Length: 478
Image (tube, rainbow, N blue to C red; front, side):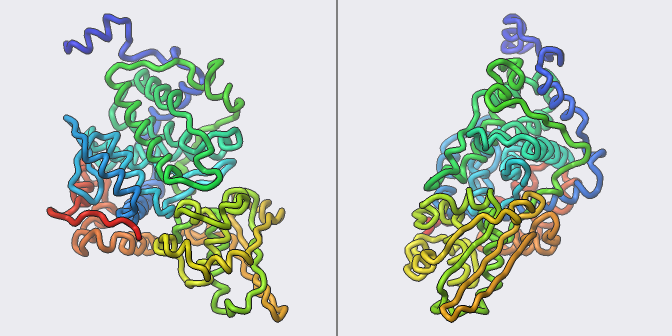
């Protein structure tokens, strides 16, 4: 028997605590994780998981050269461990929790990863970086990774659907740390008791404040979900080694429900991963429809003759993208891609919205600033009534002549009711990986991801997505 095992037993720690040890919410989550199995997911959920994997890698590679991603990789490269995971697109092997963070920062930096809309909202693909790192640690196969991702999405999305932590002052990483911890515990093969400890150790120390998404946005906006994955991986590792967490993380007098108010949280009967929305534009999801409407209008109007631009949106979109003065004077990329005035104006000026639309020079472009001053953002109760089943936006451009041009989009490209095709997802991967992966490497990676259930070791994917020897240093955004 190992010395650490003897110590845990001598200190009274039970390696497999009975479920009665946990509060009711924890027991339901532990039992749900135990029931989740690859063979029960169905072909549709498996396919949707592979689509989300490709979309997530695309989002990460597109952001590779963003300054915050360069910084995250630099931190990860300083640390090594007995068991390591890869930082995607590089030759860096590091501790699994740091790989989860560095890769997760890349996933979120362009704001082009998937979204779930319910009573609250968030980005469930934030968890994928942590789950892949743990899959590498556990030498898991492709089926096990699919199983863990589907489980994590079910927890994240059902929580978003029924419990609005944001309205209570907490941020979306609360959803992510729980879903990722359960998925990580599944991949590690933790016992029910250890899984309970992983949940507790993930949730209680890591409640995240909603201020991360308020006012003038900092670089942390794109790092918060990655940090949740990092914390979830660490919590599962702690539980595996014998650390214990409080038994009533949810139902206790100082637990989650006491902090946010008790809520009904039914866990799903069918996988939810196919109900998340992918993005065609690197813009906050609540601005996708308005930006697509603006792009539709651009060919009809002479920018020099515009008198006024009115953006009608649902309440959550106005709150996130048009209720703060910073949205009319964005000083950072993070604020700009959460600004309806900026995103609509840059779409009208350039006729396209890409990563380059948020470069520092574009934020200071006087032609964009001049157009932004003509933008009014208004909540339309009729559009609010369509949310979250839809994510509508309407743009009305009034010309000096008195003529008006109107375009409205209810389900933006990538929405569950207007999904991107498999070909669209592949094109997104090809476009965002350009410059990081060669054509042969890219095509091999796509082939492997579409058939990942056949892979015996997930490290085959991350090794294929490694950087070339002597790869150039990452370039900071200008």
